[in-house]
Length: 417
Ligand code: AMP
Ligand code: MG
Image 1: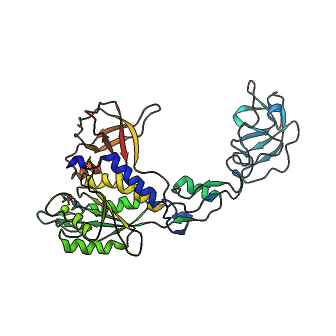
Image 2 (image 1 turned 90 degrees about the horizontal axis):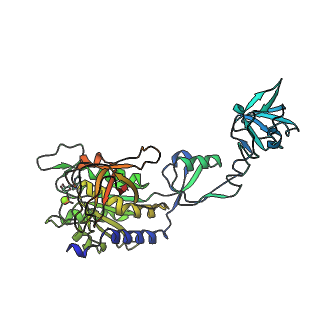
């Protein structure tokens, strides 16, 4: 049975192709205040309203000068001063320097700025460049338009807005931005054993932790979570819940996709005409993951993922398969899933499982010293239901299907959240 399932690379390629095709359906736009734009996706290019920087700017406190003159070390008169926020009262006269502060416009005629620390006073209101230093034209000045010219496109549509992009938008005068409307993602948890977080579980019951976890993952992916009531493990409950989800942009179902007697999600999806792209992947955890789409008479098909209910499986399969589709639906041009390389710390051995790519909870220390790679270690775990291990991890260590063992100190791949 297992060999008929796609391996990780095949399933990932299928999801990537599906996500790519979705990119032709451009999401609707809306306008948001700059203060609300963090985490949103730019829907129209961001352009420079003026040259950046708008004037030749000093990057130091010191003296604007002509580099050739100053480099002779002759004494030069200080003929003016400009602070940030002022404009120079005139051009730099010959045989002189101009006192200038960081961020201030450089007077016409000056081609360099001598750092305050590199001069000596030489008589009243006179300085000279300390020998043996010399200074080159352009030093400590950013020319007008060096970063961009007025009208240049600075960021394309599809850019995820974080602090740097928001700062640039502010510098260019955008008090609000055109962003894509966030996709609405229905989250359907299934299981007779589940009770809400505020309830005390009776014997045999557990609290529903996947609904809040998936809501957090969906929100972190820049989408709007829509948590549906939990469905019981019976056909009627599932049919009703699936009908309710029909207006979503994507449907995430947790639980009920394994091979057990009460795993009724796949048959329920099949009853309403689901087209399945895969019904399992050769990975661990997360092997029973289901991906497909539901027909909708009046609109585009509804993509869905059936994620196994064990929390580590749910988290891993969301990151591997749902995240790339959500990025496409959001108009986010970044690629997902995100992998990185890290050095394996000496830690308990974790073996490969024949025929399965594994994604195990791990902790990566990114605070390395120069020249050192991030160091990753396994978090002790008790299988895919181990929420404690999940919560103590910050990534998943990838064990390739064909790896015999991973040597401490070797470079390994990690899946980032
Ligand atoms: P299932 O995928 O439905 O076979 O469930 C696999 C395991 O995950 C079982 O131990 C379930 O109790 C557990 N599980 C399923 N759904 C959830 C959920 N929403 N929150 C926490 N655990 C869950
Ligand atoms: Mg179940």
